[in-house]
Image (cartoon, rainbow, N blue to C red; front, side):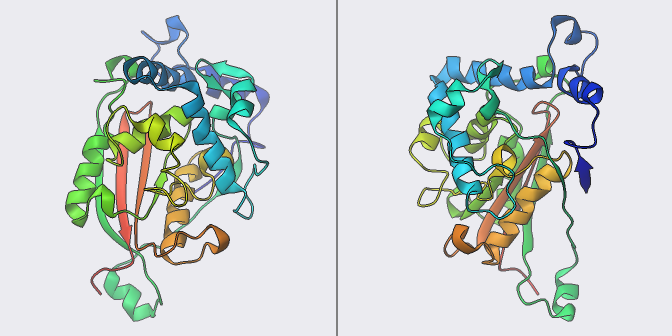
Length: 280
């Protein structure tokens, strides 16, 4: 998959992609473009659980720190929580640095059977151990809960198929279009309890030395977000981590990884569990 969101869009098309609502009947009259739908979930999370702007900002800070270790990352200049909170407001509570990048890029994979991988003599194949998906609604106003997503169900199915639990994961790639999205996904994927995502991030639990190093390449917030390939970058990073190919950003001893993607304003969620050990 390849896309050119940075150089391939005219200013007119770029503005349209950022401001159009998915639903023409109920959302567009109230001015609810894509970014606002994600902001609504962050607002609700803050109201229900006391999540703070500083905790959201820390998500961006961690991603930038990870990107600084990643060759080719789009943004590597260190930032602080104050930098995030002082960057221009896009749609409350999200500032510019709470939002993912606009990039050009591409990613590709070869997926085959374990038998074929063995016949090819691949030295260290990475196995797909479990997968799960969940579709919950069409538009944001139909979302069953603004703070709990289909990631709960998609990850449950993936863990069950793989035979592992969240505590078994060594590294994760979590779709990070906005900082608040990461907070909610950490909860729904089972890495912390619902409502504890903000303190979990602030305590360093999604970085090196924490419970689940996540988006070690910098994610969509700092590495790149080029549309369709954006989520595939997370797969690429987790696979590279499991193969021990990440150099100074390597998570020591990583053998199990999780990749989670979402779309359409949290309507679609998909989770995959990857590992170094499988059946050959």
